[in-house]
Length: 334
Image 1 (cartoon, one colour):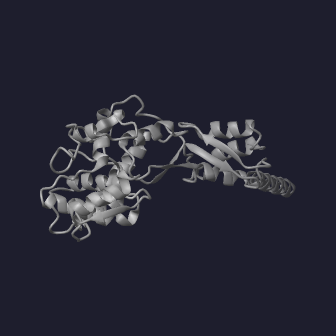
Image 2 (cartoon, rainbow, N blue to C red; image 1 turned 60 degrees about the vertical axis):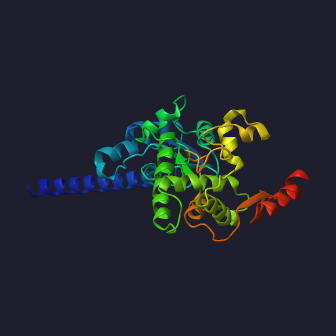
Image 3 (cartoon, helix red, strand yellow; image 1 turned 30 degrees about the vertical axis):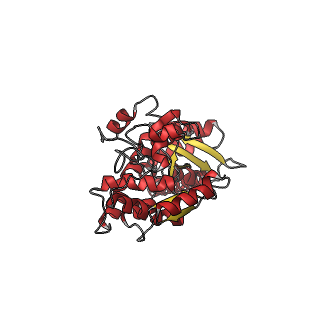
């Protein structure tokens, strides 16, 4: 009986040692470097499960020991990462465990998309339509349909999207970029409206948004925004028409070909501030934060006119006579 027990004990020890050795070998295969000599991009498809990803990585020769990672799902299911769809940059030298951890992280490859200040909503949509690797959900939709998808049905889209650089990963929807920009503009507008001057001749945040869009389109030199805002504000306070060319251009739409004629200045459109009183009915562009702040905190002064000098800046005048002289100097002579 004692001999049998000794044999059983030896067998148990051998089995335990073999199991331990097998376990250690399995762990070394999980920690072994992946088979890459140069950085590579791997995409986790939407809906892909752990076993599919392991199989694809093995088929591409990146994971050498596919068996070790299949065994992981059986022996240590709690150690399996929850994979996230997207593109990931794989680096030489990383281990198989590190690779799988990466595929379950937020460290996806992203792409920048810049919406410049002063662009129109139409230009923004064209940029989104051309953005590579973005899921295009709005192509072919009308502006009204896009706003409905964004839960803003009935709202005119112009001006409501904050110009900035946004980052997206492959497969993100253009609607998500639009939603980020929309919510950012709404939040920014609320912030600056709360800090508005008491004597401001604007009755709502939306009027401030419209004013900011005029300032943005007239601004060639960023430092002039508050003074341009001051001119527009004083003209509104005195009942003078704003007479700003960008509104004429916006009202012309696709008819604009680079020049404004006298007939264009006399044409009655909802946006022609040479003809209408007060602000146009909607913004004419996407204003940035600086233009929004200028709209609600205009610079004090006495100037009522300005004319472009041709170098991106303006000449500001207090009287019509001074303004006409500046027009002769900077426009007609040119």
